[in-house]
Image (cartoon, rainbow, N blue to C red; front, side, top):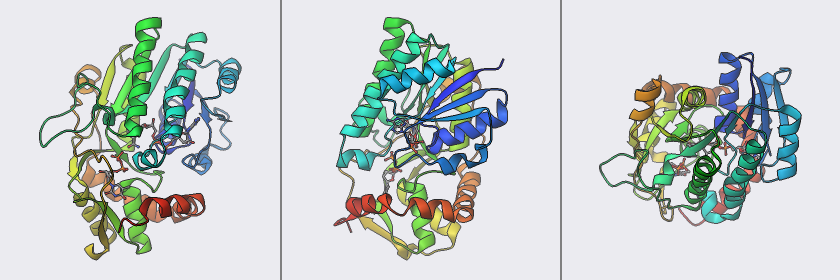
Length: 339
Ligand code: NAD
Ligand code: TYD
């Protein structure tokens, strides 16, 4: 059936990949893309859709209740997928207020507007980071208590609880996904993998925090997007679904693989002062979504890391523009005195 879907944050990394996926697999849906275009939002990610009459871009801030309400009234979406967020842990350590505003307040504004509009499904895109940090063994399940450690993850945990409350209190048809670390095209080069790829291509140092042995589970962004669509269409309201790649790796191993892929030597690696409160290990049990909804990742790291490196090689203009201007000022502040 033809649907109108409101996507928030659809000019960011995962949101723009999701919009492109929808275009391919749900061509009759109308996509309303609501995004404030912060430093992380980039309309160049959506250039291929400029003349697409079923992709409508609305510049707006999710904390602005009047703008959100006007968007609902004008477009009457039946479905909402909520990506918009401040998303980078290091930035949340430098200043948390934008995270509380967008991630907590903005999510409640969207919930209120969605309830008033009686939307059929509201999918909240969250992160495994709300579960806190693991030791050497064990996996996060959907029952793991929330134990966020960074201002970023605390603000996401806050939004998760507001979404949960909307189900229990107002019986809203909400769904929450919690995914591990993503990588792939259009990722802002402040996150580990695109930062390492672009620095290596520029012959710059690759800053590895602490001993480089912090572990993350990595998932190709396209797999995250197919999981979100599956949960949107088939998930049970009120439920949480973990999404993961079964691909745990210490940071230093990621950095070495990037260097091998690009053909540069390990002398570019530079160990720098650790991130304050740095979570040691994330690992996710994604058996619920596999068992109940039949989703599993289609890409291995061995296949998708080379594809990602190729994308950054082919799209130098994209990341060179992103790495200029405001981004450089942030980069200076973040890494000064850490070498
Ligand atoms: P991103 O930083 O690349 O993009 C965020 C987008 O949201 C940008 O387009 C930005 O302009 C927009 N935005 C920010 N504040 C806004 C506001 N107040 N109003 C409207 N739009 C606003 O983020 P991403 O990596 O694509 O992450 C998307 C979502 O997925 C986030 O909710 C994040 O918590 C979650 N997530 C990310 C990862 C990951 O590895 N990147 C993993 C799990 C979950
Ligand atoms: P990041 O991409 O910021 O994602 P998150 O903190 O949300 O997991 O970082 C991934 C891992 O890489 C994390 O353990 C921190 C580490 N890291 C570095 O070692 N150097 C860097 O310059 C960055 C940005 C991250």
